[in-house]
Length: 517
Ligand code: SF4
Image (cartoon, rainbow, N blue to C red; front, top):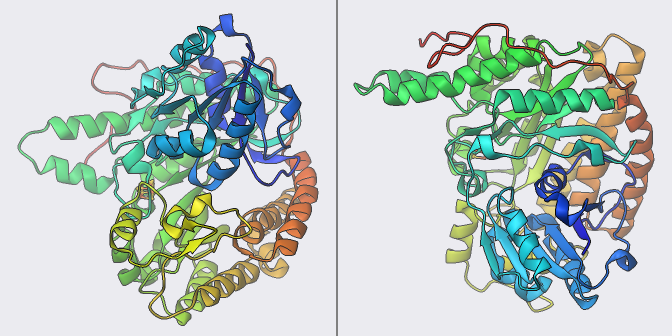
């Protein structure tokens, strides 16, 4: 019985930007008695069907975007006599769909880390259960990844998780519903050990693949401090102190390391946190700006974000702290007008964000927006017999890019205007200007390459409806990725030692001491 862990993708680039962490974590969770799993990442190359033998186990991890491809692989694997197991966010939300469309023998919902060995044992005995509920495991139970299985020279960035869950409740996001609102932090020592292992292997760029790296804000602490019962304040302070402890340890790693994460904009009001991030070599962060207007932010339950000039100031605070921002903006909110596009493009430029993504509003399963859409939509159109409220089951080339009617603009207008903002933001002269904070020519060149690659991979293949353009973009991305990867490669450091704690930890009060305002 051979175990295959498959990350499905319709498009393969030969080189990928970020390692699909879940594959390496499940490989670590695979007991030695079942052998070493075969990892197939289709963003690199498509699965070799002939490698699937009767009695093998095919574990397929899916999110909404790659579910249809995953189902195809599932049917194919079952036809070849393998056991088919689905997991991931989408399978957690739609276990029956994975059975109906993906020919699943079993579906794992929630965190797969602890339940995976039982799935394999049952397959080995010839009787997997239809459902395994992985639930939400504690941070200390997260498995470290098996980085020894990484193929050489295929990925630009490694990925390490430090915390799961997000206390916010944005209406377009499923993270807080699937991973929960309680932050589950991993043990600092385990995180640091994994990162050191990656640097030893030659990875100096690492994504801290967290739902929200900044789970406790100054406002949260102040609100907890106003309560008579101080237990919440103590709990929040502990979480925050652990963040600082992690960053203090990362700060001791070699200076050539660069981390990237995602956080909420409120971190801009926390100079101590930003300074610690910079010391920890956290050079950039994805910040969900979403909308530049107060009405737009209200529409997505994100009114904790600033708008207007306050927003520019907040984003500039990141840049001043030398933490570079990938600003994420959403188009197609009901409050958007044709003027929103130019205003957002102008804003992104003025706020000094280094990278930006402009995504079209898409009701993602598991979100508040999706629930509302599914409940309230009447006369939902179908494509090839699939209702639009199950759009991920429509083949990508037939799938629309806009799902809900907009009060002011047609679907095509939204798509064309969004594409134009991507094109404008990533025009060569502007990208070159944005790279001016870098000192060496090599670094500026890398910045330009990555900017162009980002646009090819995410804008052109994600927004364009013209299949020739999508194919052309995939080819360009493939070519650019080969060059970009070389710029990210570095020499291994096999002798690198793990940084030690700087100060002894006093129970209940970890370093550094945080003062609540
Ligand atoms: S969008 Fe970001 S801040 Fe909002 S719930 Fe999702 S992870 Fe949290």
